Image (cartoon, rainbow, N blue to C red; front, side):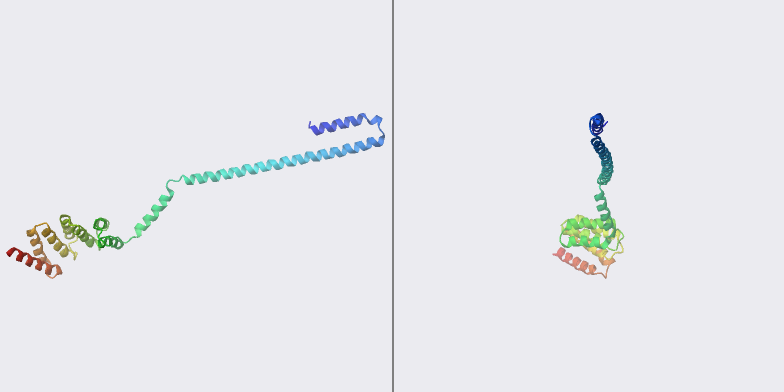
Length: 229
């Protein structure tokens, strides 16, 4: 039994014991007060019940909120653990950009480095161009300028190899006569005059109307004058 109910019961018992020794109107008044107390007690019980119900509802809502927060945290954790998500996006962007690059742009970048005297970088870029676009319209030019890069660095033996590849891989290119002339110059720089003269003569034979043929004639004449002195 709750404490309030026990007190009320004691009060009623005491009031009942005193009925015989107190006036009737006092007893009536006491009974009325007891009734009021009983009503107030029941109201108090109801208020307590309502309060418990509200607290229980609040706890239920709080539990649901905590569950939602935990679920959100779990989802964020899963996203954070996705392997290299940002790197994958960056790679996709890079791949898309690479696919859209034109061969002419790649060639121009290489030629730009060559023009600025960055021969080692330009040579590598021209080589990459030839490897990636062997059948492109600018492939013969890229191959020729690989020889130019080595020639500019004084690496005449390497330049000779690259010039020779112009005719080897691109026989119909207009640069074949230019490549032969530069090969003759490489032989001359390497002290191989006979090889140089042979290449110059081949230019006169195979490309008689070319600008390189005129230079070949002048070069042959100069070499002869040097030998007769």
